[in-house]
Length: 194
Image 1: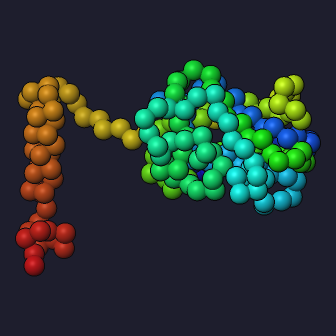
Image 2 (image 1 turned 90 degrees about the vertical axis):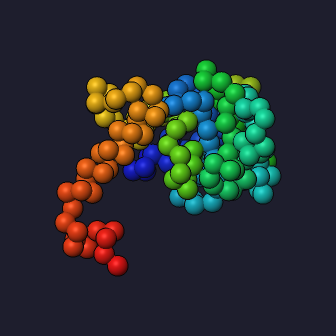
Image 3 (image 1 turned 180 degrees about the vertical axis):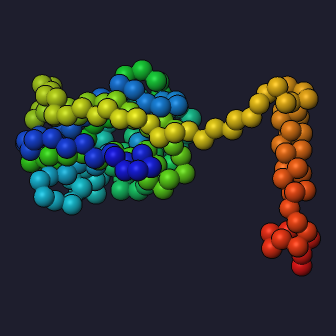
């Protein structure tokens, strides 16, 4: 997986397959999301799973009511949240690519949002299954990774004058005012300089 957790390459012993399935066992923060499900052969940079090559995507479910989150986005070659698939549930879900004909493969790459805007909904535990006919499956590999840390806002709640959003805004304003008031008026960051 890359440093940001945006994509993960899952490698396995080379084998022939026509159907490649990712069974998603767990995701971080919400139902799983993929902006692309890629399939590669040994020593090749050519994505065999692209729709433009005749590959067919399938999924166990898809979230309802969002045109930007569709099964067809699994292999459209486009990255980012606007071109992604999101499952309907947080239970076990799967996505699958049917290649136009059997091919020798040795890795898949999955990504949630390769543009880096979102870190939620990342697949953290999954199995890669392969099949020649789409009925008998073999486990090729397992993914188990930690999700990237989610951004958090922390402060001592005891310092809030009022435990409401208004109290949070007031607290943030007072902290910011305190920070700025300690800055010398001639500092190059000072808003008082023109």
